[in-house]
Amino acid sequence: MTAVSRFFEDVKTDEELPPVAYPLPVYRLVMAAGANRDFNSIHHNTDYARATGAPEMYANTSLLLGMWERLVRDWMGPAGTITAIRGFRMRAFNTVGDTTWVRGRVLSTETDAGPGTVDIEVYCENSAGVTVGPGTVRVTLPLREAAP
Image 1 (cartoon, helix red, strand yellow):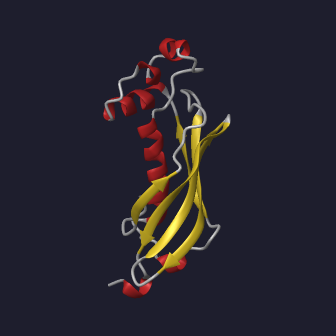
Image 2 (tube, rainbow, N blue to C red; image 1 turned 60 degrees about the vertical axis):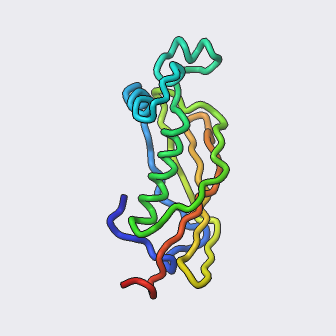
């Protein structure tokens, strides 16, 4: 995560977030499955995954959702808050040996009396194209005028 917090006033509609790349070696899939206790063999056993119709072992939902979170948190900094995630839908496999890219862009901004609200379109893609999403992550960012 960036140590610098982004202020609402600095955000522009259609702004692209810096993409994040996640190579998917076996150890990353195994560590993610263990970390969130998803011990289904489809996430760490090639033969089992193929027997279920998947092309190869593949990333689980929690790992992919964590990728979305990292993209947004790196962009907004520690003063921002994720308030909602919508439209997270797996469309294709993120398989071992491939690289998953997480990308985002600002859809809209709004502010009332409180912090600024930003809606960000987020999705994952790999060599097969879009694999997760697109969905929307809503965040709140501090206003510069309200900063200490």
